[in-house]
Length: 68
Image 1 (cartoon, rainbow, N blue to C red):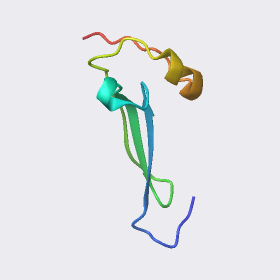
Image 2: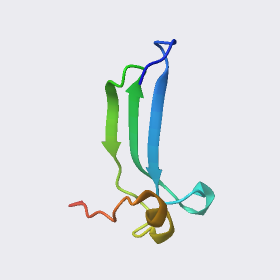
Image 3: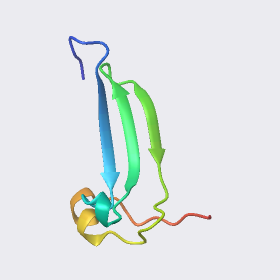
């Protein structure tokens, strides 16, 4: 990954769906810079959703279990 703009960053998200007004949430967020250097990589525990079968069919992000 390279770019003429060294200030460019790339975001990748995985979500429970496309409708936050219906309770869909971010499951993960990854940010890399123009050189492919990892700047941020975090998974988030959904507060409202326990399953996301439609999104999982697209993003293959598994239903996860958290200790808390």
